[in-house]
Image 1 (tube, rainbow, N blue to C red):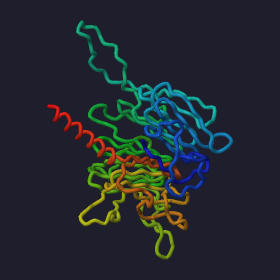
Image 2: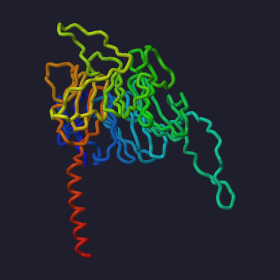
Image 3: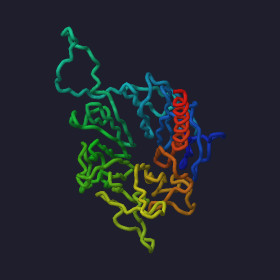
Image 4: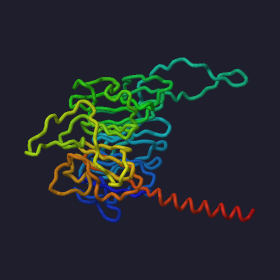
Length: 394
């Protein structure tokens, strides 16, 4: 079973302690929390500013502030198993395993509303027939939704035929063959898409440099990020107004707004004056601090996660590093006098050597821990004993 640890903004009762009532509004160290129902190990989680969404099977819970008081809880039943969630302040997008998309308003008496996306004509293909020559009537799954993401002012979906939607309208059609969506992320006003070849596309509001293009402008449709062309990217994250990417070579790139050190680059000069620029339109290559201190050991970045103005970085050794705004404790246990970190530092109260699934809300962070090593040892031991018994019986 996964252990869920939370830190950051909790003034609206988004999270409860495992054995207590609602934890305080500003949580400054990783604190174990409970999940509605009893499915913490399999829960799908999405965080917004004023509520947190949990899904297990066909059940969906939203907990936070909706109408009157903190700690309110909305529970609904989906018509099929839930595959993914995406949360923003006004609503939660719900993607089902069957490819259907729903929206749930962040209100106490809200119900799931089915979203019908604009139909895109598909290219004609050979008709499949039975051995008797009659045509097979199969359900067309090309318009099923496969990926979703949303922000304060943007809602995006990707279909199985690689159509990109600004829900519910189609924005762009990528090639349907030999082209695969790997990851989709949204900030407050922009979107990032990573494909199977390692190419990054961005669109939306780029006036704070979050799109990674030379010109600060609004881009209506997905545009290839030329600055990273030829570099295979393996993981991306979209913060409020900044973006982050990791390459197959273990390099970290950031771009966009850096007002609170969320890019891990120094914001202030030694004399206390603000550095310029605080907006970086093009991806900046990072030289990360040493991690474990072992000679000839490089703890390369593996995955990256972002909130409104903070960034979390998981390195190959299993350590979690953080940079950015920490006024609400969203970076875990840090000196209380600091409003932000403008260089990546290790999160103090995260144990090393665990496998993490990290979720970032606008002002918070949530970590799901799973001790794979312990399970691996136990399973290996059981397998070995079984093998010895079978061998002896032979």
